Image (tube, rainbow, N blue to C red):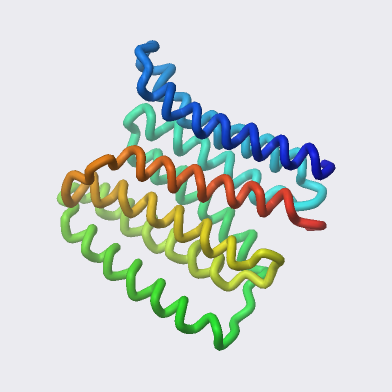
Length: 213
């Protein structure tokens, strides 16, 4: 995939992500509007799959699972949504872990990251009354925390962008959890989807920028 194609692919993803907010507010048939949430991530899946010779297959698989999670969420299947996104993060971890490199300059960011994410996860868990959801969110929280931790240790070009993408993803999911289990969050859907699409777009772009597997 040449540079022009990569730029065009990211541009299409961004246009589809922006289109979601217009489709969400239109008066079209309900299921069509809700299912459109998965379209930008499906686009990212296809784009990264075409780039597999440079970036490998793991990120496309992560994006594919995310697309399934988007679809499940649109249908109101919360447990399935969590399950698919847990698989997505396991794929992200599988991609990030081999390229992790610890250094002293990363200690403070990692400590700060852990000091925010882990207590917040514990706080949310205290507000979940349904046992199945409690277990699912607890497991998912540990998995996405691990994804963020490995993203922050990347020894790749543009390594800091992996950390940014991971933090955006975790922030998006944290808003979902807070809004669902703790208290209503104003403009929740806009905040959640903006940060989510930004995170997935960054992961997609970083995959396209890789020079080899």
